[in-house]
Length: 274
Image (cartoon, rainbow, N blue to C red):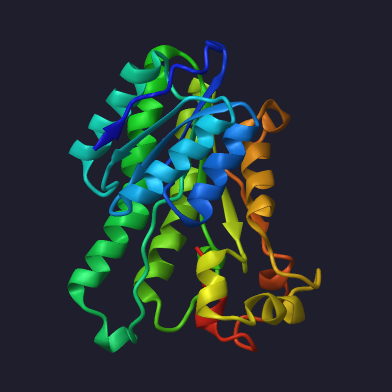
């Protein structure tokens, strides 16, 4: 299902961003924060249509235009259709893509099911590739340039027990970011990665009531992260401030992964946040 843009915003010079998985969690927070910073937004959702509706309304309340559509990012037909609809609806190419949609399974290496491996890799890694390719093609066609920001995690560089499929996907995102940055630079398209640590959102609060306190104990900066910390990093990569930065990963983790505290309290399961 799709939702066409509201007519309330008439700023034809406004910026246009795509956020995948924008119906809940960090994706929703990023979409709303980008709208508050003057971006029109197109978001995807896989199963949470009500969440997409709610986020769209919040975007429109900022005065920006909003569009949502169901899209499983692991399938090229759906991705290509979504991107084409975004260009048609807004009448211009997006200049920012935030690859955020993802999924996760918990299973020991010897018990992980093939179908779960396929689903996680298809969504988290193939999905980032397909969305980046489709949006980059439009950016090249419109000669607009732009920025692609991949949302990674601590799994970009550290192994996590019982998360082999998720860890493999995030490690792949690290190299996808670098390779795409090299090839797309000549088109004025920058590709970077934001890798969050422990971020307190509604889901993590429900999963672990002491989530914030746990992260505050292990983070060198002494606190848990918040969605605005992730947004600040994404906004940096999205704007001209970082016009000479590409192929990089910015760790937004309070110093946890630098301190190599992965296998102390909290448990590896608590440390996975994106």
